[in-house]
Image (cartoon, rainbow, N blue to C red; front, side, top):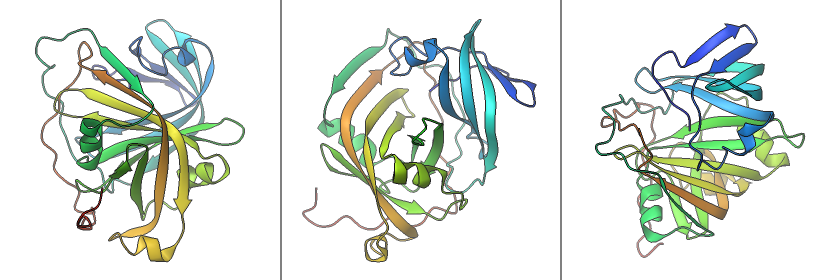
Length: 248
């Protein structure tokens, strides 16, 4: 995740964007983006519920990255929870990084109570894409230390994420603790369940997705981490199905 002061994204032309910020050295993508890379990016304005996906190729540039655009398209504001950035978290410390092959109990609680996450996918040719998923708290479930499930709601009908995952199930998920700036990065494999019977268990779902976790990276208290206001939930969020008694 990259953020900065207003204006840190600059369109240099119709097919080129300057990203005037750098990833933390401990970010899982920092080493990858140190060289030319195929990338999927998402520019999202949470306060005003606006988002723009920009996919293409990056090269390192002074103070950040230069992005050559292959695809650019806006998405509808559905399921975006409105938030405003607040002051930087007090007494910033050096990032604390932990890695594991499965989710810890507190990480599962973070996932089970989230209202927003981000998903990365790629085609078989390596063309990358990044997208947003949102809903009321509880719409994502950690079924076990290595399994995460969520309902897939009606979207923009472009099927970019689902299309990629159908042919290439490898993906990544990013969860954010909006109160303290903690980030949780998951990599693994996704399986789409197209069954109408399964989807019927989740109000508003057209299908469901289950993610098998292979690696977990948690980054705590990065220097300059943003904290955010309490969310204003989208009016489009479907209700969340009640938890199954005795379930995980």
